[in-house]
Length: 243
Image (cartoon, rainbow, N blue to C red):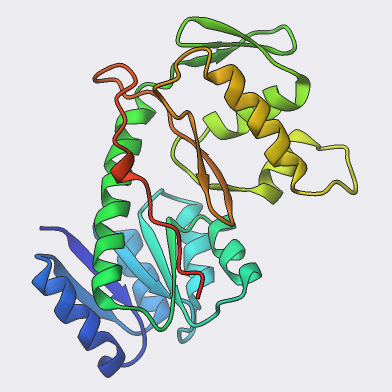
């Protein structure tokens, strides 16, 4: 059983989702006020927070930004805003997943389980990231294998591997790999990621080092400390709702 905090205004809107989470075996708490929720998360963090964007006093994105400045507490954003820019903003601030309203309560319960599994995997990964960077430009060593990288590839790899499991948007990766460029299309990141994946595959073709998150960006999946290159594809985060 996991303790789930639902931060959303309106009892009627929250009751159906709370009932589904109870059926899924979770302990739940419902808070409607953003400022109260922020205090609760910081002082007594639950296993995961479902965070609506439209809240009184302190909105959901402000809460997300403040929490991310202090911890990697799992957060799923709930919102009626369905524009791509809104979703990207949530991920850039550190959301683990993003669910657009209206949604099926069962879907949210499944996403909670997925994010919680990912959080457990990330904690294990943080203890073992088999990658180091040499003093020579373009030199990286992954699990004992030397990788010849271009400058852009090296910058991308540094950015991704610095926060295992965290989804990084294309815009953030563009800033990391092209710090001096003023006008570069974000899709150039995809080209460099493709080339980087080919080089990573020389270390192991059985492990997907860089995970794609549709419409958002990429995340680094370091090798698990237990069992070389063990990876369960079914544990990947579900794509967010495109509706």
